[in-house]
Image (cartoon, rainbow, N blue to C red; front, side):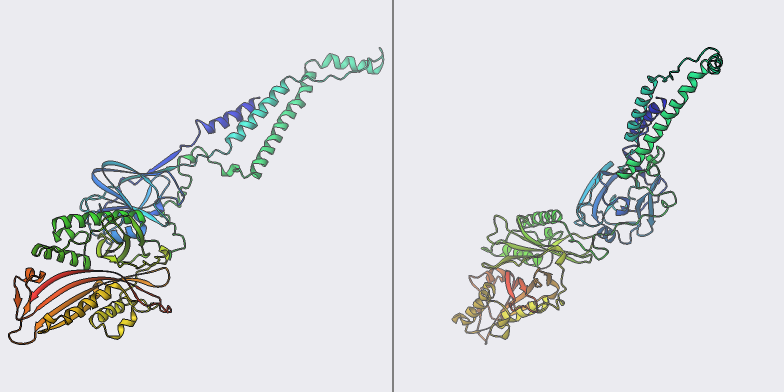
Length: 580
């Protein structure tokens, strides 16, 4: 009974007063050095760990941001930073890297999948937003040292595999002890011996000398039997537990050990930072450069910036979110509209709904992302081309191109198959991206040239070539020498692969329309045209140069394909009109 009660108490104790804590908290050493950035890398968290909380304490305002491990490393670059690399037995394992003492303020960067800004104390639930390795960056304003009072709270191993077996075993032994207490010794029935015989004499001798010793002699084997039975039951319980996969005694966690995480390294191992887990597919595995949630946030920011700039007709407001061809065309529209009436406003940029997107993979910069959207005020879908020049800059809109009626946007394919293609690359394409842009420029400049056979018939080329033919054939221009040139600007050419081996190419053409009087006394009439408003003259005897900007979107098929290059979208904007 005593053994049974003891076993029950041991089992209950493991479930109550000896039970290990549900969580364990480990902090950065108080004397850890600091820099403008603190990084918590993937090695500080088990791959499948859940309910992991990071607590940061600071005297001022700071930002906690989540990003891909490679992106965080790229953003930190040469800055001095403290890195939390793993969880030791008593404290977090850290490593400090010397470097630059200032960085840009990380708040609001497009690189982060999420961020939180706080003052004082912040507790963040550490959850990976997608596949791959993720790190956490903590910084103040980029000049003030980043907080290092960081602790990680994670679930502890609260398993007590021996608790229930001990309680059951103890209860069985206790019941057995109680049962044994009610069992009386069994007396041997003897026939009485004849008076005077030797047997009678032996009985008389035993009766005088035994007394209570006889009872003790009879009970002792039963007590031994009870202990043997208990040991037998114990052996059976252990054997069954082992067969069903329960922990053996050597696997159990003692009360002292339970104060550390189940996955804590031994004291000898804790001195070495733990290695970060590799992404699926090994080191070569790559993931989309941004998540869909990031794309939505970026598009919303771009659309807001463009809307505000359009409303104010102020090109300086575009700078944070618009660059390249998109900035050139929109700025020109603002300028032309300020000088001439009846010039339409630019097509609004719609952030949603996103009909499809092209998000390449890779760890290099610059990065190009394409989103096809169509807002309520857009009659046709528009392709928005976004470029991030380096890790510390935000994505900016470099091209906004409306799809041509009757065209189809190619299948983007899976993110794992999308890659950004250099302007002079694309060996597996029917033409390199820049060669395709040069070909469309030549075709528009010389419609009768051989490049017409390179492209599928399209409304953009038809409209441009028809306009040029009509201008030359106009009788009012008989006394003028008219030329049209289209030149591809290589720095604006971008290309992203598609799922079928082809590529989407986005480029920009500088279109110049020149009209020069043929002889003395001849003049070019400008009255009643937008050119009069831009030049302030009703006519010119020296000639005029009119410039247009043309954004073009094309599909270039794979080299082995029988398809022709297809112009899918275009946008044109009057840039300027200057007298010679």
